[in-house]
Amino acid sequence: METYFSVGQYHWVSEFAPRNCQKFLSYLVGWLCFTGWQCAITSITFLAGGVIQGLIVLNVESYVYERWHGTLLIIAITAFAILFNTLLAKKLPLVEGLLLVLHVLGAFAIIITLWVLAPTASAHEVWTVFTNAGGWNSAGTSTMIGLLSPIISMIGFDCAVHMSEEVKDAGSTLPKAMLWSVAFNACLGFLMAVTLCFTLGNVTDILASPTRYPFIAVFYNVTGSYAGASVLTLIIILTLTSAAIAEVATASRQLWSFARDKVSLRYRQLLFELYVISDGLHTGHPRLPLHRSHHARRQHPTQRRPCLPNCHHPPLSH
Image (cartoon, rainbow, N blue to C red):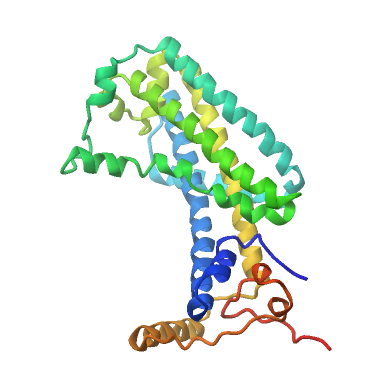
């Protein structure tokens, strides 16, 4: 029996979607997840590269900020994450464990430093005063737009699913890991957000910081030291770099699982899929052919492999 669970979402869609659109929906979700994780790598390396560049701006007065410098940093961090996953894959659990300790201890180090050294704002100012620095049409719109950046810390917990074939007792271990990671980081993130709101200082001055990352300016204003601000910022850089390593590991498993199902995007196949969708929407009866692999015919229904448009399996032997 072959049952692959590292594919994640498109396996679930294949299992629970209506039969008349099972294949197409699983195919679509598979490509969305694959491209999404590939893009997630660039987003996290963009943050890491930008923070490094901001730290250089803080410490080197003669440095001239150039966008292409940031691009080179993004490429360097991405290359490092790929090389780490290629050459040191066996060390990944150890390194991730050490960086988890850094993540927790570093967060508390930043929180304690800010509460001890920074002048704090009043509760009234923190909870009732809203700043629309982006010039949006209302404070509500500004708040919703502003949530886009911090919400990224609450997504991606499904990365554990794509490592399921390398985890012992994945059926019970992964759900616990996902739930605990979301709950713990939600509490830790809320504590960090409240801390920054109370210790932020003058919002206008912080936003005008040449580092282009307000938290770096907050660290420097609070500590009054380039070294102190650099150490606190280094914690953020190491955490982002470790996240890049983990995202490359996840994206590689996602791509590997997709390739294992022999799924590829071809010009004619894409036209055929679009034709079937348009025909189904017009007639109300999608004509996408349905078939099940020989594994699916012999296994329990909840253990079927995803049924994908270009997924071919050898004929059942007699």
